[in-house]
Image (tube, rainbow, N blue to C red; front, side, top):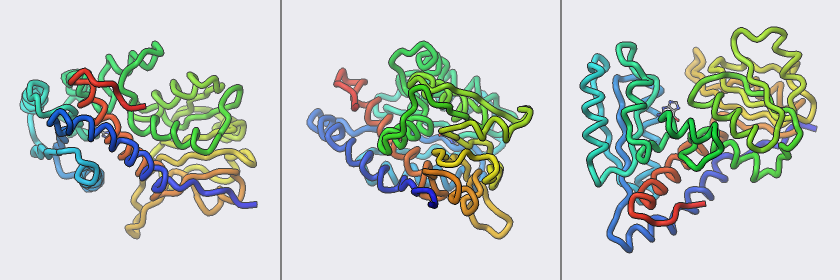
Length: 288
Ligand code: GUN
């Protein structure tokens, strides 16, 4: 039986609707949640992501400002912009779109963002909170995936979860969240030996490697839950995930599509984190 396809769009719409009471509580205090989006350079994929995020803000009552900087911007200028946004009381959330141009040290920029305004959850204080099991901002993509798994009733306790990719944006926080839920977690990467032997053990397989159709049917345990984080542009212009969708759907039990899977959930989590940042900035209770 082919895999059930997880509808990320529908779930994201629910998540977006769930922030409305938070936006209304802020409106009662005459506060509009504000998100600053910083984009350095003209990478087409980043431009698309940023456009989607800004549209989602408009749809949910979040004010957004795009800070477009040239691709050759100096690190000091970018840091100045971040520090200015840290000081601006109308800005509750700051997002610096990744990847950054080569001349800029991403870790330095992320560390400059006020942890309370770090809607991506990439600041060391928020990543540290995740490691320590403390409250903090959780990165949007892994947080969205955890919500997808919960909505589908996927059991994690005692199950084998394999994360493909060790990025700070997805792989590492994903592994920590799965571990928090008592899964037995393995993180694989480009140097992992006998990769298919490892992935075939996975009850839950999260693919975040950035290579089109990298995960083949032979790498998937029958009935597994397969989460595809990849967004890769094929030569013919079409999008493909990190998972060979047509082949893997014949083996997996549950599978996320690209587009329409993880992507919309990431954007919805960003809105959630931005509204939360605004609520917390005025001493209000955060969203669930
Ligand atoms: N680039 C790819 N995904 C993300 C994300 O979730 N946040 C930011 N800031 N950049 C990204």
